[in-house]
Image (cartoon, rainbow, N blue to C red):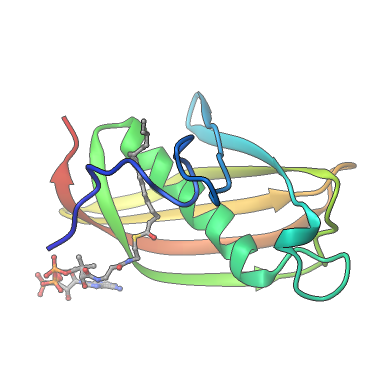
Length: 133
Ligand SMILES: CCCCCCCC/C=C\CCCCCCCC(=O)SCCNC(=O)CCNC(=O)[C@H](O)C(C)(C)COP(=O)(O)OP(=O)(O)OC[C@H]1O[C@@H](n2cnc3c(N)ncnc32)[C@H](O)[C@@H]1OP(=O)(O)O
């Protein structure tokens, strides 16, 4: 149905020439990454495109699961965009688990601007498609 063997994930693969090249760290129950958007990532002038804000949040949640041996696909996601995310500044994205029932995982994520304001929040449901081990 799907393959990941190319290792070309748009968000995380170091081999994807047009990818975001995100790297994740895991500390306790939090999965974290940082990202500095370039001009090529903007929608409105100087502002990170909302679809890419959602990509950052989605990927952080997926990586929370992947790090724990769970390969899961996003089944549903709600994003609240509270503040514009400027290009050219390093932002932090954090994800964590809210709950799990069988194959269904509920996670949350947030995007934090330098200075600490939360610019976007997401909640999502993921469904396990296979174990990644
Ligand atoms: C050196 C190289 C390094 C490179 C690294 C490479 C490794 C990369 C590592 C890590 C990469 C991580 C990459 C993550 C990317 C970010 C995540 C995404 O963007 S994923 C893409 C977007 N999402 C989709 O495209 C899903 C499309 N949808 C589907 O495929 C299916 O609908 C799917 C899999 C989500 C579910 O399909 P079913 O057939 O498996 O399951 P059903 O039967 O539909 O549902 C099972 C149960 O779950 C409930 N369910 C389904 N959706 C639900 C929902 N939204 N909320 C609540 N319940 C739901 C159903 O009602 C059902 O419940 P009942 O068993 O009947 O009780």
